[in-house]
Image (cartoon, rainbow, N blue to C red; front, side, top):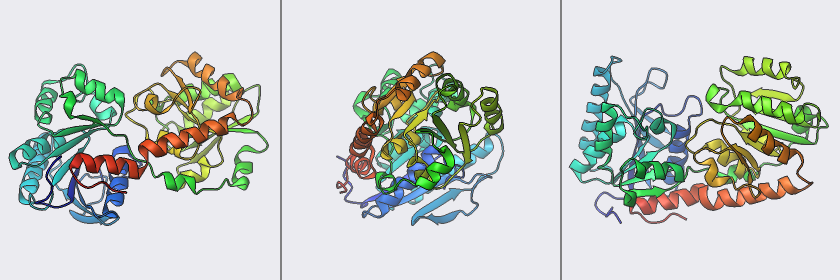
Amino acid sequence: MVNMDKAGASVLMVLESVFPSQGGGGAESQVRTLGRHMMGHRLDVSVVVPMVSYGPQREQDHVDGIAVVRLAYPKLPILGALSMLGKLCWLLYRRRREYAVIHAHIAGNMAAVSCLMGRLLGKPVVVKLTGMTEMQGGILDPRPSCVTRLKKLALRCASYYQATSSRIGRMLVDSGFDHAKVRLIPNAVDTDRFARVERDFDLRQQLCGDRPLAGIYVGRLVPEKGLELLLDGWARVFRDRRDATLILVGDGRLRGPLAERAQTLGIGDQVRFVGPSDSVERYLAVADFGVLTSLSEGLSNTLLEYMAAGLPVVGSRVSGTEDFVKPGETGWLFEPGDLDDFERAMRAVADAPAGVLAHMGEEARKLVVSRASIAAVVDQLTHLYGMFPIA
């Protein structure tokens, strides 16, 4: 356990992204969720981020009671990044008596600098690996660049690594990181938020009419989410049956092309594009199952929200999803990008006897509450920090 006595129960979260999120980003929303909960349970949390052009421009700010510092820097190639990282070093040194542990979200440049400064200042550093950033051109890429190799050397100074999925944990060890420092701690989901919602039968009627089955996708409408496969597979299973509705909650550059594809496939009347929503729980409450067709993920927040809402999940066998979707118990898995395998999983949903989907949804919720509720994740993190457990 790390000795926290001198600095008290204070956590400095370092996030190499905009904060708060401007578009539902996973790492950004996790920092906000965890920070808000920790602040409400006797932990002092502050967040350090770069000041990006598309985000808020205040250097000092508060979000949900969380103190936020944004590091301004010149928007110049290389020099801008070096300037920002230099400011991060100075901040970590200048405020060294104000925090007890550094928690870096996303294993990028800011995390690497945090690890080096943590070693210099005698501060424990936890580095969270979120998935996509590290796997594609990052420290878990099998063909790292010279710069990435240097970054990996710096990241070896971390006290612990938070792997959000078992696959990421294995990849860390395979990449040469110390297995004794790897801890499997998933993203957190506000399970209470999704438990309190009653089904809105008027909304269900508006979206689905008299069709007895409703599937839902929540997220960005972008290529990496595999949504063309979702529509193609849906058409194979439900075009002729015409007893199901697919609800798409979210927006993105593929919205127009996907709507055209649905019409071409003959399922235009079965697919509902409802746009982005700050109340996704309302839509989840009218659905019978959730769908995730991503080609790659770390651990999808949407997956956890589906399960928290009591929905079984049809999900691609990617990092994170394979940890939570238990075939035949909490949902069905299929190989990413494999249309035939996706069709098989969707037919299992379509042919499920009455009550089976609801029962699987109950099991899904039990699993996510036990492993990924905010209370469960914060308890694991505070133990990792060396602090008291939070009830």
